[in-house]
Length: 161
Image (tube, rainbow, N blue to C red):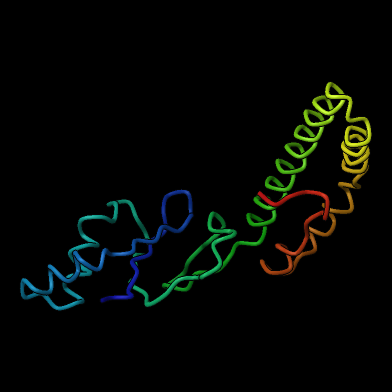
């Protein structure tokens, strides 16, 4: 079974990864092709004609958190930090807004059921979420030197999405 991956750069500068199906590679090899020939067949059928920097590699980054920020040069994939920061800020903003909306709905439900203590708890959490200093988070995101540090920046009250 091959562990090779075909990577290439798309027109939007993003990186696409093709993982050849082991059964297909096995079938091609059973037909008399070497592994490299089988990979070349997969590449010919699946890589678009406008792809750039087409490379066969043994492995790609295992952390896919910032997959849309991957860039590659000569088969070496790295994370474009400005793009990763934008992705992280968008995710955090969406999660923040979704949690506030969820809590407000739950607060209303609890009030309608006369569960005042639970409703007040939801309301208090909404107030805390709305009081988060987004400027501080933005500063932390902008200063994150790498994907690991960036991933660690997340408000405790906001569930990760």
